[in-house]
Image (cartoon, rainbow, N blue to C red; front, side):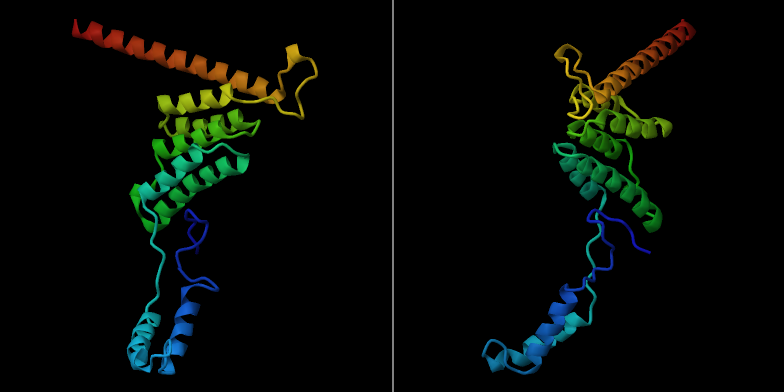
Length: 212
């Protein structure tokens, strides 16, 4: 089974035209006893090459910091939906790698998901508000959403541009379907935040009354 890592490859380290091919070539050249026209170095170079060919060189596996650094790059890059999609795929790859390698440090948490949301906020795709809200819904289901999670989604809503396909002809009514969706999402998030703030204040009041 192949594990999805940052570059979408596996952890075998073997490519069709990769290091193994180059090692075998250098080994063949060294066997002749004449490397670069200096025959005296042929045997030593041959031994080193043959020793290298006996060991498989594996790609270093990315750790949590590696994943987060790449996610930050996607979060700060403006571009089409494919970039934000890739950020989501990296988060999914972290979950898969964590399960298959048994490394809990690779399991994506709030920061990783927030970077995926931020990637949608930076996207130029008209549906970015909806896609950002979808990732937020995943975070909320795991009880991992924080203030930054909401902030990134609100930024996606605020920067949603009118699509050239569904925008109206009247400048005063130039609200595309994507912008209307973004507005509804933003209003829903605001109500959610208000509700959370009210519950927090109620809980604080209850704690104060109990102390008194």
